[in-house]
Length: 261
Image (tube, rainbow, N blue to C red):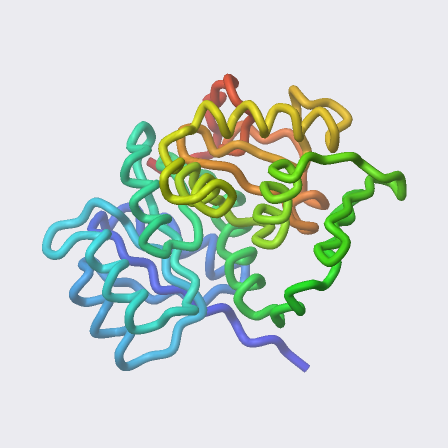
């Protein structure tokens, strides 16, 4: 029994990017369909089924952000990943707040891109667990009904806010949650700008759940954007990578190799 290829709509006005992506994506079993503008992508979305969309933020015409807005209205569950430019954090945050599932920063590595696409598709296709179902990732187990957390079977004492932060992140494992969205979920909309306050809680939480809080495995930072809790596949695949954007607070990204501009 064969598994059907993941159909990816790649929307980018740069022909070089689309040409560069086609061979590796095809080789890895993806079916790639191209669009050079948002208007063309929306028309394709109306007539063809897709498993994921890779959407450039900066394009002529209606642009990537407006295309995202219209795609999300038409297809609420379709995985949409944004192609963004380094040092454009406001664009990344804006895209995530409007419903993007993830983003990949140019220059990017194909390995990173493929992992992000597969993770987004996997999350959408997975059945939603009951709201009070235990969450278990790696050595961390969180039980919402009991508001308790264990690590390697040993209980961890968390404050109420630490538990709420961890629950919010683990229930969306693999996805980046913006600072504003996490603050709103835990403290309310009036606190959505209190990023330093959130960082203090995250540092304390890392001390309780990580072997090495300075180099976290679980609670990862997307610098200037937000936090994400590693999912099971990310933990399995984790290894040193020059193009990985998931870093702890205060660290800098290394120069990537084999990346696409």
